[in-house]
Length: 115
Image (tube, rainbow, N blue to C red; front, side):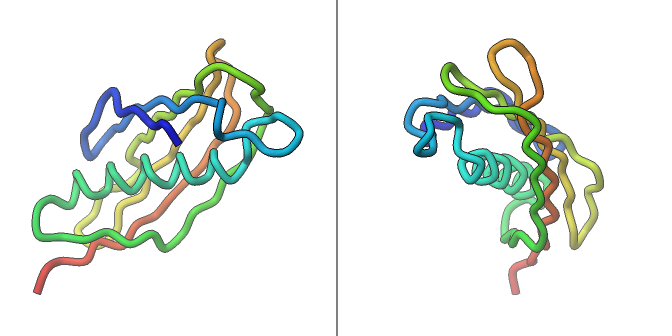
């Protein structure tokens, strides 16, 4: 997918992804690629929040696609909504090179502590 992490913490993860290689048959950024990108960012933020000795498992992901992209790079910003002991929720906003919002996603991850 070509994802590059630019900033990372439990509260916020910022990354980029090229549209090239992540297009559907009509040449548009694939909605599944946007959803996978959002899930990766939100899950990574949850792992960073949870800390060593934990695993995170996605229990809910939703994505609304607002507009399409045909080229360039998209940027995803995952921001914490709620960071708890057993659940972490993040909102992910994906935008194009001009800063236009392409997708809004939300993920909730279950935090599983090591036995």
